[in-house]
Length: 473
Image (cartoon, rainbow, N blue to C red; front, side, top):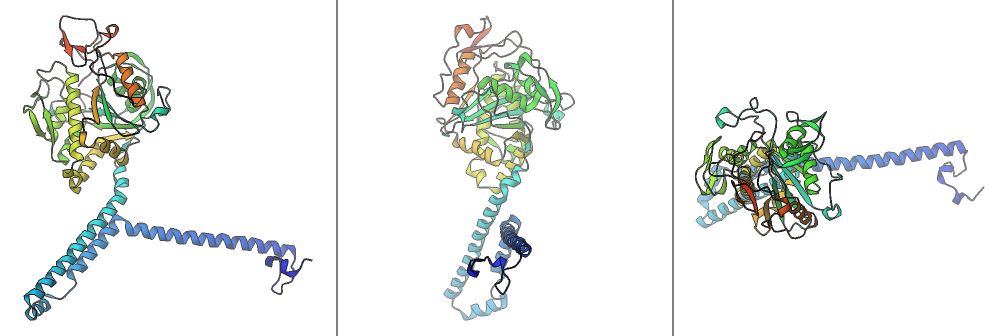
């Protein structure tokens, strides 16, 4: 037997004598259980401390403690009678010092309360507002259509779709109702590209009547905000807005990734009806209106020109109008107005008038979340977009329309200029200078000349002949 000093205490009796193996085994089990129990107790104590801290820093607790502190500051001190007696005995200078000290205490408590409220708001605001966004399935970041994937590693690409459903529309608005115009349309499709270095933002719009090769897509149910198991067969020579109408967010994302090669990592769907509440939440948005907006369907939308502050109802029709008298470009005119409006709205939201006004900011976020659905969408993601576009510095942000020949083909569709489109999105994916948007369209890709066509900005032409559209606006 080894010396007693070398023996494990678990193998000896209280008299330091060796014991049998069965007792040793039992003691080892008891010792192991004791260690686990101690570790469990330590974890419980740590968790209790964390719970206490969370409760202490929760918005409700902070508000209550701040209110109690304010009450204590205001109510602590002598009563009215005592104050009167003391003032009678004190000099006017001493009374003034005391009033100043009391005001200082109240001011300090108010400032402290605002700080605490700010901390509590920051702690819970993101979770609170993120819960309000409707999440849908739209993204496919491993798609074979994505090009130059390594170059896009830390880029942010927001696919923004304006879904012009008639849910909630009234007869007075003149746009139809959910019964007369069922389903959902992607009347606005834009991609906001923010490269990894965050040194520029490029927003590219896609005409709703752009001719695309639509892939097979699962049917979209706009009422439930989800896809179904039913498959819609793909179609050649389809309009872009049919991709959203039949397949929803996932289908339009597929189409845009095919055209651009961009990795779309954020999907933002906005119901046009929601623009009303967003604009009203920030008390109007100021836009630069170039021509009177007198629409043959919507009526006199906005007759003033120049810098005009518009309300929610005006904003809704401003972005919807596509039959404006004196505007032969139809969808292109609407795209320009939509870009103007989105830029103006972001500028207003990021201004001190809104950011420093908790009521306006909260109302706007609530209105935005109510009208918005998306994938990989939340407060953090939208702040990335808004902060990147803050100030709308012309040297930093560029609004473009995807290059088209500028004249509808015999199917009533807009046709891409493939070479210019490739050059544009090659530059975005690789963060190189943008190509000249006004470069002429190669002869091989120009639309057949007609006697009624006229030049359109960008070196292409736009037919002045009225064409029938197969989809409603």
